[in-house]
Each structure stands twice: as structure tokens, then as C-alpha cells.
Image 1 (cartoon, rainbow, N blue to C red):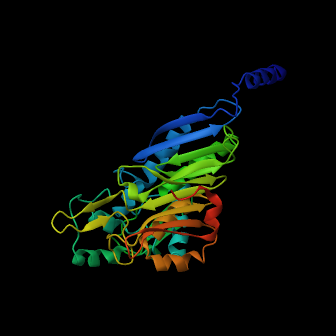
Image 2: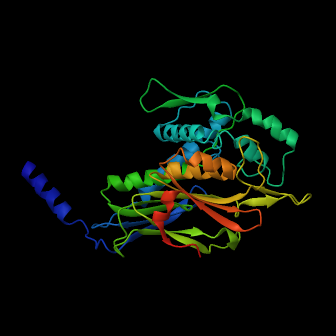
Image 3: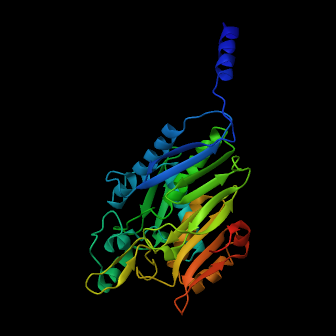
Length: 345
């Protein structure tokens, strides 16, 4: 009987559908309010969409402030009984690291301010907060006031806060972690060459076997306008992740004053007004870190980012900013140049 079972297993394995590894298998779908695209090169045909859906569902139910009964929304509502899992803690820990290294310019407790400006799930789209409201809400900002602790059960944790009323949101980093989780799923299936993209955040492994080259990823031109996607430059990526942040697409204008407000809120000042920096792209080993650092650098003054980046050698950064003459300028960390496939257009 054992020999028969073994024989059947061998037959099943031998009948697995073969695939030319130079022909990509492509998967697309919806995810966390945006879309995803996955391209893999593998010597067997595989189906990954159910696995991707499971990962997306887990992230939505755990970390999305746009899902009414998600765990993060229950925490924000003051429910101290909520228990979160490993993925939630992973994002929390990465956010704490970026919070410390950026002197608080990346802060996932900025959610009350994001909502006040109408960019969050709880915000009124046409409302602009007064300076008095901003000053009042700043008391609820400060990631150092929150902690995550082990429970008596393995891989279960509780989030604690020193101050009631704080609003935690992962929107500036969870998408990057979602990309990383999909990549890990592909790793577990033995896929050695792939590119995963969710809403513009990307991770790659191995090569594009179709062209026998590194994966090519585009960076959009911020001058092309909110609805256009004109490429600015092409980036070569292999075993790296890249994420971007920009205020040239998601913004609104006060109908009364004509003042422009952007979706990146400065957690130090509480302001959401445009700065000199209009776009940032970060290359890192994980998409979680690339996503978080891109948001932080987008929020901070240009001179501050110049000082900061000298102390974070593990990332490479492209900053797009407007100079005093209104001209678009570029500032790159020394290592970013090695990834550029084609120069600025």
C-alpha cells in the first residue's frame, strides 16, 4: 500500500503542468482601494490569486481604516480587548523604527489630522480645519505614546496607548507590507523571478527572464499633472523594492481661500500645505521600509531630509523639488544613480 501511495504521488508530481520560464505568468486584481499586478517567471504553471486574496483580506480586516469593523478601527474606538496578529505587529515595529530614525516625521498617529483635512476614512471631504482645531488635535499625535505588547498566546498582541482618543492609521506603510507579504508567498512556492506591484509600490526578485535583464520600473513625471502618467525615468530593480510618495496627484483646494492642501500631513506642525518637495522615491530591501521612508521624506523640509539621509545608508532616495525660481530639481543619494536605466527626460 505504501508503495502504491508513493507511486501515485510520483505520477501526480510528474503530471504537474510545465511552463516555459521565459514566458511570464501575469495576475491582476483589486487590492486595498487600488490595483495589484504580479508577473512571475516559473517552470510550472501556478495559481496564486486565492492566496493573494487571502493576504488582502487579512490586511483589510486587520489594518484598514476603510473597513468599519477592522481591528485597527476597533482600537481607535477605544476597545482595549482587541487582539492583533503577527502582520499588525510587523507593521507597528517597522513604523516605530522609521518614526525614530526620521525624528517623528513618519508618524502613524497622525490619523486625526488626516481625517480633519478630509483625506482619511473618517474625514469630511470639503472641510478644512482651523489653526485652533489643528493645535487641539496635535495632542493626539506622537507614536511614542503607543506600544504593542505580547499576550499569553503566541503571535497575539495588544496595542496600548498613553492617551485616549489617538487615531492610528497604517495607510502610509501597510501597502508596502502587503507587497512584502505577497512576495513571501511567492518565495514559499519556490518562485525565483518575479515582480509584485500594488498601487505603484513594487518589489522584485531575480530577473525578467523574458528579456534576460533586471526588472524595469518607471517613475512618473510630477509635471505631467494629476491624471497623466508620463514617465520621467526608468529604474532597474533586482532583489529590491521601490515606493514613491507625491503631492502632485492627491490634493484639494479651499474653495473660499484658494489655498491648496495636500494629503501628506506634517506630523510636527499639523499642516497639510504644499512644501518645496513634490515627490520622493525610495529604494530599499523591503517595500515596507521604502513606503514608510518615502512618506516621511515627503513630509519633512528639504534641508532636514538632506541631514537625515546621511544617517540611513540602507536606503537610496530620489527627491523631486521646486527651487526658488519655480524650476523642477532632483536630488539623489549617491547610490541611487546605479539603478537608473534611462536619464531624466
